[in-house]
Length: 323
Image (cartoon, rainbow, N blue to C red; front, side):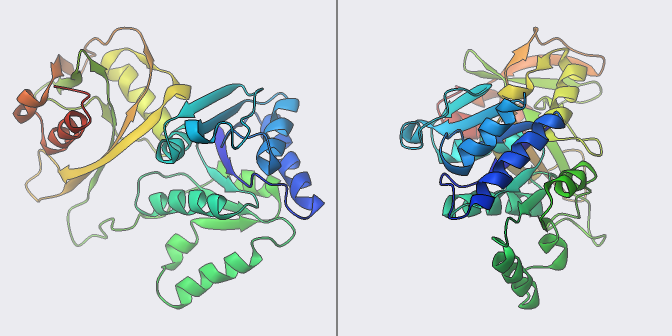
């Protein structure tokens, strides 16, 4: 398990902030929970990373090229990912993590937390999000979120997805037992259920790997659905092992795109939402028990794929990754 911690690149005005960051880092290591964070060595970012490392824990930093020097990148991490930009930074941090905690921080901390909280409302992940309130830092924000509910801009179920805790031990226990609420726009019974799925993007020689399951005519992206309690990384790793006999390396996952389209095989117009990841792998893909055929697909073969697959092919072609 890994937890993403958003926090300030400054230590803050009070000594309690540094103490809280170091306490959280030690707790993560003691519980064998990896830390994912923004990769800096200054402020609370550096404190939580150093405390985790000092206690023998795993720390993965994710930082854009443009901030590598400005944020004084940490040189002693278990793993440092240097990415193209802030969008890739946040997507990579989200893909590597099983939950999100915000220690005190500034505008960047708020932006990162609010984005993953929104993703949770939309069903793009089922991971918990929380504020670790240190010395009352988030008290006013907590009140403002309640004000959003009072003014009917936020429903109670989504408000409750972002919890506030003053005790990091209780927070980690909450994460261990987290059950996500129904996502925003999820059908409530008056219409067809939507289909939520995960997909692995594997490109070779400018063509994308697709699979055809037994009894099907169309080719699909390899992947499948989460089991209860699984993270995206866990679910997709399991599905790809079953379908293709290869192992996806958990620390290499990178979120690429979410695609929504008409689901294949239904007559009621339901939609499929597919979260697409890239990941390094070990072994050569080979058809598993349920797979009838593998193929390497380009845009010229798009009609052999369902609507979601066609959208992924068009996206990859627009980026010059496939022919």
